[in-house]
Image (cartoon, rainbow, N blue to C red; front, side):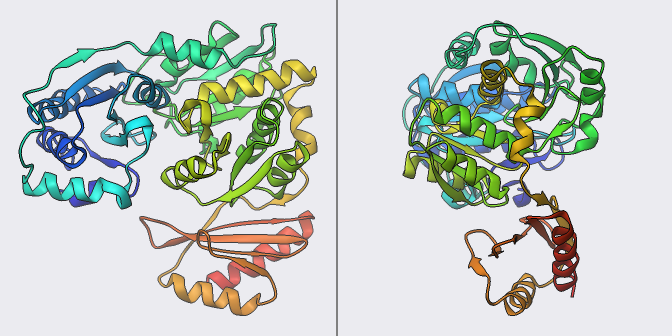
Length: 441
């Protein structure tokens, strides 16, 4: 079995090559064998091979004695909500997120949408699937029943909208599951769509709003006029990017600061987690709005655990994941859009006007460098900046009064990723050159 499809956060590979129907069947059996679960919610995206993967996965699950609750096509946030509300023991979402159309995969969860990662079960499931040592079924053969979670999810997220009055929002669905995620928004806003037809070949662009080149059609749409802002979903709609009314890309940490403001106005003193790569402004905004900020490392499994441990009301990742206690400490892109819209409506300001005071510092953005020895890179940096405040929560962070940086290794490539921020643009540019020269040796 292709072991490299079992990754830190999910199972993912090219369909028919390293992720086959037989592997899906084995994963289904291994999943039940590992968890001893009896009710599994299973959702899927629009890729043409998601249905055969569902069929074989479900066959393995039911043969091991567990029932399958078939959600049909849905977004990943919808599948998490279903897991938490339908009294399921576990959940699986069939998707390869933003990967190209030939890819597919599985996102795995325990009860209440608690993620299963490489450290908490994926590698054990991989070993079981490869060995075939599934053990005895947990009961008689299970059944497959269908459930439409869309209306319940829509009512749930819409219940958090406070302000009246329609907004006009341009939406790039990227031919993928944002079409389902945004159904919840259609009762609240006027949605002006592009690339709305479901198509797992992604004929218009990659479904990845983190890549700014994919946002160009949405920016053009917004610049045609009449939109309050724009949103762009990734392939399974657990990430979302925002465009302001001028057609400018809103940095995801600025969006996080905005949403934190909105949530803290309703949850006084709430705990908010922020990605350690985020601007200083995010922590400051949380504190200014009476919240309690906590830094978190990168990766949804780590963030969701820390949210539960600290009972956080909200968390945000620089990649455009927005996590809410109200959605079982998981993502909800629709809820992120609702909170941003509420701020726009309640403030009477344009999105760009809300963002402007948050742009207090100057950031480099994420810059990759090819390195063969990450430990040596860390040592050079620590030797160069021994008087900075050092943090090793995720990679190496070093902070001074007027600038900071974080260097993290890639999970899959011989790369380190640098994020750097400073109080002035000139200092940012100077320190960026300095740190990169040290990293690249």
